[in-house]
Each structure stands twice: as C-alpha cells, then as structure tokens.
Image 1 (cartoon, rainbow, N blue to C red):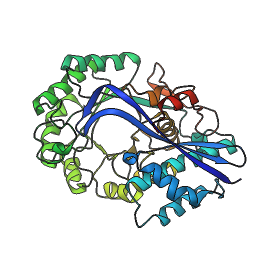
Image 2 (cartoon, one colour):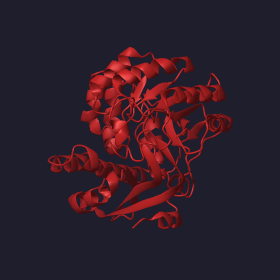
Image 3 (cartoon, helix red, strand yellow):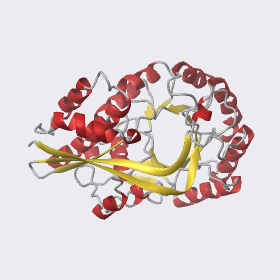
Length: 388
C-alpha cells in the first residue's frame, strides 16, 4: 500500500457573540483537516493546528512531497523522517502542527487496515472516558450569575467537572496579558475572578470538579497569591498559570500551592514536555494532539509522564476530529485523566461528523468500535465551513 495524495482543507466558523480568555478574544473557530489517500482505497483523517494559517503550506509544500509513494503503515519511520528533515526550521510550532495532523491521519489508516478502533489497537485501558465541560469564558454582559447558571447547566447534563477561565485582569505582574488582542475587553479585577470562581463552586456543588484556566496570564508571584486565594473553592487544577517558557516560574508555583498545576497546552513535542516534567513544573500534563506531534509523539509524552507518576489530560479545544483523536488517546494510556469537551458553540465540533461525539448521563464518552478513529465526515458540513 502506498500514499497517493495528501489533501488539506481549512475550515472556519464564526463565534456570535465572541468570547474571551486571558489569552485573547475568540471571534472565529478554525481548523485544518488532513486527509491521506492510498492506492488501496483507504483514506485516513487527521486534524492539524492551524498555526495562524501557515500549517497548510508546510504540509502541501514540504511534508507531502516526502510522503507520496511511501508505505503509510511505516508510521514511526515517516514521523522521524518529517521531524529530521525539518529540524533547521521545525522541532516546535507550525511544523509540529503539520506533522501532528499527518500522524493522526496515518494512524486512522492503520486502524482501518487492522479493523480495530485506535484505542484498542494501542492497547485499551478503558472503553469510556470521563469528560469535563470546557467553558466559563468571559463575554460582554455576562454576569457572575450568568456564569453560575452556565455551570449549573453542565452539572445538570451529567458532567462531573467544569473548566472556567480566569486571569483577564488589568494587572498580572507581567506584560503578556496586555499583548493579547482586545486586551481591555471584559477585564475584571482579581477580586471579581475570585467571586466568579466562588459562584461556580456554589453552582457545581462540592462533588463536581472545578478547574480554572489562566492561559499563561499571571506572573509566578501573582499566581501563588491568586492560587492561595482560590484554595477555599477546591480547584481540581490551575491550568497554565504562567508563561509557557517560564519553566522555573511554573515550578515555583507548583511547589508553593496545594492545588495541582496543569499544562502546558502551548508546549510542543517530547523535548518541550521533558523539561516541564523533569523540572517539576507541572502536576498534570496537557499535550494537544493537533499541536504536539500527533498520536506518536503524545504517546511518548504520556509514557514520560507515567515514569514520573503524572496524569495526562490532553488539551482538545478545536474540531471534531481532534476531539475523536483525544478520546482514543485518553482511553489507551494508563495515566489518562479526563477528556476536554469544549461547550462553546462550534460548528466544527458539532456538525462535522455524521455521528457527533456526545456524553452520556454519567458524564462519560463511550469509545466508538468502528475501525480507526471510528468517525465519518459529513461532507456537506465540510463544504459549508470550508474557508478557501
């Protein structure tokens, strides 16, 4: 079997109204589908991080020519080939986004050839995964009571955990917050963020997990101060409290707080996560399969995390293909903790598949038993959201 073509399809849908985190304002949701065709008539589906729109060019111009005519089942060899031949301008960022989508699609092909769902092909640990509602964003006109109502809605639907945004503060002892787009929109004082967390905790009750996501907005000292202020509300984790590259700062925060530190979705690849792990900068490891190297690299990251007795909760805030891949990944590793399930309006998540992924009344997602990723694209939705 040989690879005959690699097709990339950029996707986009609007967010109305927009919503915000400490990292910026979300006005659109975007994605990049990667489909790999073979001479056996089997097509693999993947999703890449968009890299600001540049990822597609990397795949089309640099990576696809390396792979056409190759055996798609030689995944490790192809992964290492792509990584080695781009080392002068890759190893992180856009190139790894590109490799990620290709790797996911290649594994989808392998599962289809083997006739097994990927989580079983990898060696299943479980056949359902607990999902948490990822929401709680800032929006113009959204009150603390509105946020509490959102949280109550998630609990009523069966979610056993919710993640909310914090950190959109006017002063965080770092310049990074002020570099975000529309930096002053929906800003709140730290005391308001604490009140928001308190309201969500009351709405969720004591048995539902509450996670808070800072999106790298705080300085280490401010993160420690805020982390201690949030401790009465029992956060399950604090996500990305400081800048991704401030590994020593994150280690300081992790050492100072009783609350686990999760991160960093914005790190890329095994070597980046190696530093976070061996320097005790995180308690919970959060690679994104569409950014950090696909199944192949993220399984290596998960193994390293396991060797340090750390749990893995992949970041999965994009389209339906990434959500499906993250589901298989989480079910196949022994230290899989939870599946991020974005709850913002998103056609790329809800409409892209003929059978959308959903939670059951227990707040878990059952793994599909069809081969590979076990998904089928709705071509009408692909055309509807195609952005080229």
